[in-house]
Length: 220
Image (cartoon, rainbow, N blue to C red; front, side, top):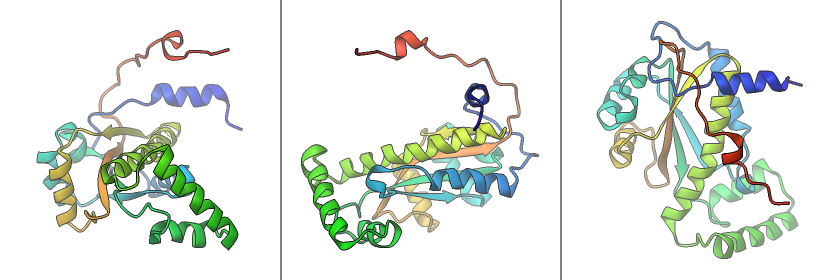
């Protein structure tokens, strides 16, 4: 098991790195490890409503630069740069993606699939009221995609790799750039966030966070 102090050290090490050292590259095996932590991340009902696009094409990064105000220094300098896409469609019980997950990935028997589909439909219809609400489905998928994003950032920090999560972009224009490059199926996916990886160029400031008493409320 990993020591608690080592985990906390990684959390304290992690900062939103705004500029990377362009001469240093993340080793392929390290980046594969980080991607594997995303692949193993949990999602509601296990439906994995995300897609990860690794953007190493510098010409495509340059096209993203004018519409991504939050990555003016990270886009050009990051060793690796990803777009995290979330589903806008395909998350209804009868949709091919959900059926593929239950049949081929989870390998559920027919009776479990039938029962699970009923529970899932009730969840969508009654609990979260997402049936027929495409924007709501996308927002729900984005919240799940952020679990994978967080896991990648933590995993990277634990092996000494810096990251910067990015929401500072014009969503419609950034999606258009990715779509034109064949990196995004705009009918079924939207851009949830971006994430840059590399090694910090400059020292990072001390981490500041609210004290625990302001963050946590106990109900006993």
